[in-house]
Length: 216
Image (cartoon, rainbow, N blue to C red; front, side, top):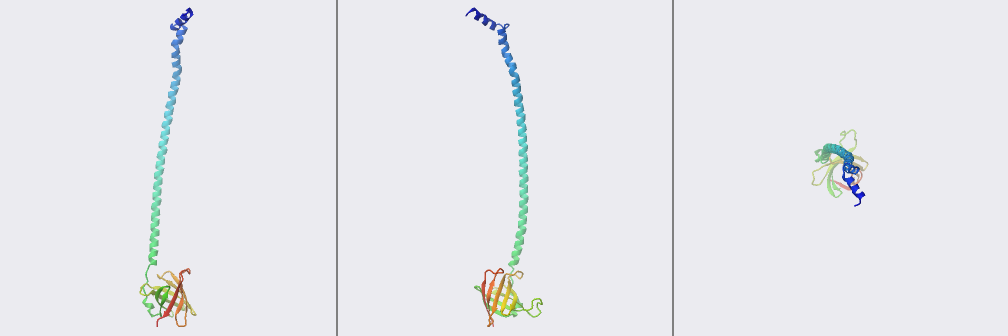
């Protein structure tokens, strides 16, 4: 090693020299410079934790609000369902009452037993009919009207008839429950007293032939 190299090495090893100062103070200066950065990093981490905690708190509040909203929605749906069920029950009760009235069975009226009797067919069914003019003064608003009833042979369910005769043309309305019109009859009286025509629904559909003969 040359003399200059030995001198430089000795300066570095001596604490009081410039080289020693550099060596002794260098790490200290580096630590002092890095400390603010460490403090800043710690502060940043603390701020991040605070923000994270706030975000979690907000998320918790949002979840709670969502849960409450869902519970309120379920309560509203339950209320609407209950109201709908009650309304449906009312409708069903009304329909049942109406259906019950429509199914009311009429029995033959002894008052019609004095009217002329006819026997024959309605479509493919054998029927017996009591039909004739209303008694004079029985209904001042229906002068000349005809009335009566019919039932299937062997059956006991009576169906009412009421209408008018114009010349030889007979037009009748029938009612199977005494309140509503269930069908319409249109026919012609023949010279032998028989009645030929047809029976249809109120709207004119399902026409069926009617062939009745007077029973002497």
